[in-house]
Length: 425
Ligand SMILES: [Zn+2]
Image (cartoon, rainbow, N blue to C red; front, side):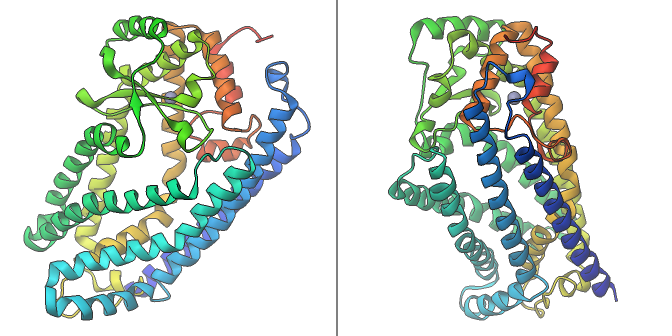
């Protein structure tokens, strides 16, 4: 009975989520297409009609691609769960690995097998995105060779980090008793904090080169700003983003001594010194206003709730059968299965959290913009924002509902309006 209830809830969440995402995506595409013919008044004189139309076409192409990937993702999710894919794979891996190598090896092999199958299904979509869509709009700079090297590195890094972490969590699930989920949360939280330090310093440099600002006079200028904001002087890096894409960006990342502001070389090449200063001031705003720790606290709280829920669900027979899996007989642990099922089951329900997370992120962006205006020129920040939109073919005319739901950064018009500048030209 409980099993049937879970199946129905899960199926309903998938159907509702699918309908909602499709509705939002088609709204966005209709809105962008309807505004393709004219540059919005606030940007006349700063954005050419050509750039505006490229952004519209790019948004439409990405929107269509997004619908296809979502449909594939939904089929794969139902395939794993209700149609019995995970159940079949579990039987195969268990029979092959458990008798010879034991329970931990079986569970790690199951997690790796699911990740592998997922990766193989996603690979063509990812390649299509890079070599068809990005290529068509002149953004892709990757050769197939670099693309394949990246993929191989990604698998190796993922395995080197993911397998020990999974082994630790599975061991806690088996050995730490009823409160295993609390210990698992401690381990997971520690891991996340460790990644905040290791990602910028060790992992990202495996894929990109990070170097200090090449221009000495610019370095001096931004050094003064950084000192004024209480940021250590060696925390600004330029990344060779042009190696892979013509898109441009700047971001703030890391924790403690690993914190840094990163500029893509593509962005740096486009910005005047004052604009670099304004973008840096925005990123320093994220640092000064403690946006990374705030986001981490929200993530830690959510993962505690999810693990506590799993602590209970993993004990219930219906949790497995309701999601299309027969639990293992005594002698084989169900922990890896339970972890997988939680990872499959949460996103359809968690989809409703998306607008909340997006709203929090937009609030942080407005705050960082306000900080940047106080520390540097708002006019320069506005110019830089327009250039960023151009480099990324970001639409200036998003559907308001779509933007409210998904956008981690406020639409350009709203950001510029919040800067309260006189009209640009
Ligand atoms: Zn920001």
